[in-house]
Length: 366
Image (cartoon, rainbow, N blue to C red; front, side, top):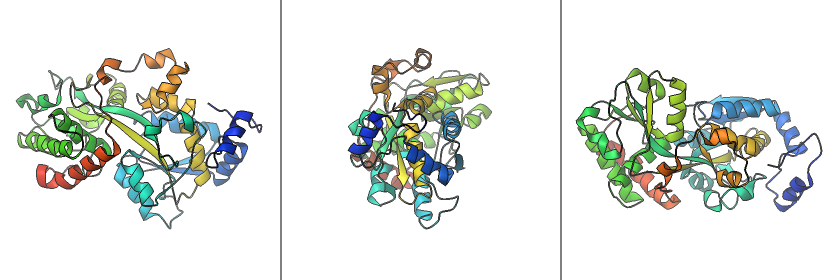
């Protein structure tokens, strides 16, 4: 991590600034410009998602900026629409930054909705997880898992096919609307892969057929599931990212007891990406936010929230991850079969799922 101390910029940071016109690093000028703006507007960042509550508080404490939080439960498409709807609006409803599913980065770039910025730790972000021009960049990833209320579900499902069993009537929910939420779209996609379908459009269509069958058997609950609905018994089995399931388990603290199961097949890893709105009312605060998120401190904040930060391999190699944090992560063996869909595969699957959900599955998730 390149640290800025007082008003003296390190030679290393200065060198980075000269090699990339897009990177300010955590310079005095950037901090001052961000503080002059006084505020950062974020969207779709629930505090129990990926440790974001502590990450936001850490940023506020470090820089003294106000963080205006819009619609914590929004999906990726909602975030993009918020930029479009507020192009000419510099008020509190205009997001400065977005955190969206991987497939949304290139489309937002193509539509001119985001602007380039390369953080000072840019070189430690894998090339496969960032736009070469700096318009978007991976932040963290996880895999789809089953979060299970052990009080109500005596035998936890071990794989996707198990969800079709009669014992799971009125039990299975997605953590979002599959017509708008990346988390839900990836859940449908993972189910399709588990059926042996090829990656991309085929898996998307197979996933729709799986949920059609799940809905037809009466096992699917058309409710956006959360730890609260799981605890109340409305959605005893919740399909969500492993980091959301694990943090939800901690939040419920044994009431009820929770199992988190990584399925045996159809293990899909989802990378989320950060980007700055091309119309950001607080562009310098947005850049400082990115510097914080991609610093060692910010990356560890996500890891403490059970996400695998995008700089995980680099930080692990350099001994920057505390042993107590590593000890709380699921066993590595559960992730060995994880598939990382390419952008083209995600795009094809997303189109099939979002366009086909109503006609194939016919369950109005809300």
